[in-house]
Image (cartoon, rainbow, N blue to C red):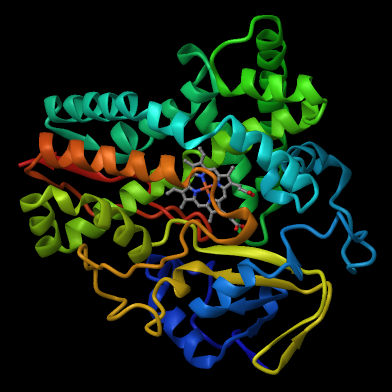
Length: 406
Ligand code: HEM
């Protein structure tokens, strides 16, 4: 067994979050599973292991379907955090079968490839309008002006949230997502609880309104699925809507700005993309690999496993390092190089196994739409100032990305 505490892996160090990839290389050298005392976790940095563990049913995103907190030697979260946990624990991302299977099936029904395909003209038109405004202004903040409004509007539109009621969605989401960082502070928890209470109350009202007067939207679809077979509780509907809203934009925003920043730092690749827009699909995949928007996902060990001779007991927690897996030289030739023409690109940015991202086709469509609009309408777009990072590691991104039209 090896430990990571003497290595440069330090999610609270801005120097590490600015560029975690050299530290990941050290971790991969150190071993296949590495003990990290600071978070009481086992780090897994290799692509083959992350990929296998995501599909391994001896692990779970929760243990509550089989064990109590006491069984796992954990304490229940404090009562005042309850609104956050109620919201979180009823979303499919934090459930395991059979509840996960039931909810995912119902949501997939309202989230078919056809529904997503039908959105394409809307997504492309919106991306074009947002870029037109950026160009008319001579530049701006790519995050605030394009990367964020696009996915927020798309998922809000899908769920049937009126445009006039969308302003609080992003702050609610940011406050809730603070809890997905490692060892969140009490202040983070307080903000997440407040956002959970307000967001849930808002959705409860919206669900009541759609029950009265159904529309052609996902919430009405979820209500119908619920009422037909009594298979989705109101809490599950609320948790599903919040999960879709949060998951539906947080990573897409970061993938967009991380991606463009990577392009600005690799002018040769950007020039190749500008010369050949047919590269957009492989560019989207490569940018998601090169600077992975969601860096780490956790799993509980439900039944003892062994990795490379190290026994990891029931009750332990595993942290899979997606950014490291996406830079594993055993899978990717010259992984530190941005190569928009990379043909073999089995990155795991959308996960794998039963929790594989349900929104992956939509995310890909949005990323391609904003990229095409920026290439076509702003061919001289360039960086106006060095961007600052957010302090987050798990949901890794920038505070903004100032750009100008040359
Ligand atoms: C670049 C954008 C995106 C990235 C990188 C991303 C990544 C991920 C990852 C890694 C997971 C699984 C986490 C795990 O295995 O523990 C996941 C799950 C999920 N994602 Fe995404 N996602 C993106 C966009 C979206 C969008 C646009 C939506 C919805 C509109 C969405 C909805 C979901 C949902 C509902 C789950 C839970 C699935 C389940 O537990 O079965 N995501 N996503």
